[in-house]
Image (cartoon, rainbow, N blue to C red; front, top):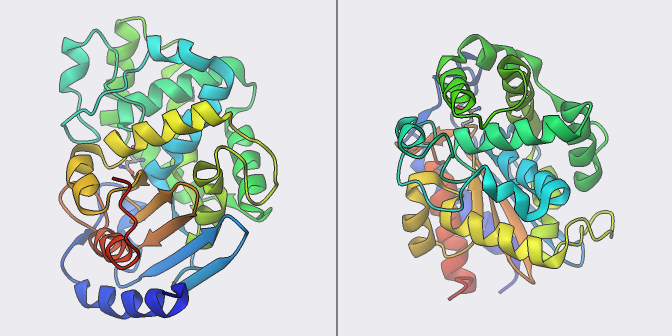
Length: 304
Ligand code: GLN
């Protein structure tokens, strides 16, 4: 089956789901995003690109940034990183605090907020300008030097930072946070507030489908083993406490964000990014999940 007609059909049908979810509004700057949008882009390992709908409209990548932050931390810390953050599914909401108290300030995995905060804290200890380094990495990997951070979104998150600040402070009380809480929060919000479109994201994540080699730059960006490990964690925790259902329905590693984006990986074949801002109760895009399930079914993409 050729990809373009399939994407066009999925685009048409996914739009029928408009109205079934709710745009994230706990970050006021995100609440202003138009709800009725749907875009999809596939980047194949030979550099082929297939798009539909609003694939070129930028959106806030939010938690999708956590996968890249982890890759950057894996490069700098290797397995030492796992002394500070776990590898287990949390079974709780992405912004939950409850397990931190019981587990001595060690977050369950790097894709819930607490885990990503520790990862950004770790990066802040090794990088003099962690936001600049992240932005430059994303620009290179996406092949788009025009990528920018939406400071309105970052400022809005900082203004409403209390839950994330509580997590960071709790982890600091357990000795698992080494830099100034406020500085790390600002860096973390800047990562989340990066604006990218589906094409940028499908390209930037191509290394995950390609054994660590970036399709855009051709460089081996992450060692093969760490790439496999990152994919494994995305499979078990990339969609927070809905990761099991996603694995069952779609069957591939993926990372979502409350901006409505989801990036999924078909190792050896392609990366796909889908975006639609209306979310379900887990903070995952309603039309996005449906579209990935449909793509997976049509192309028989489930890994197992
Ligand atoms: N910046 C958001 C937060 O900290 C990211 C959450 C998400 O995308 N799940 O709450």
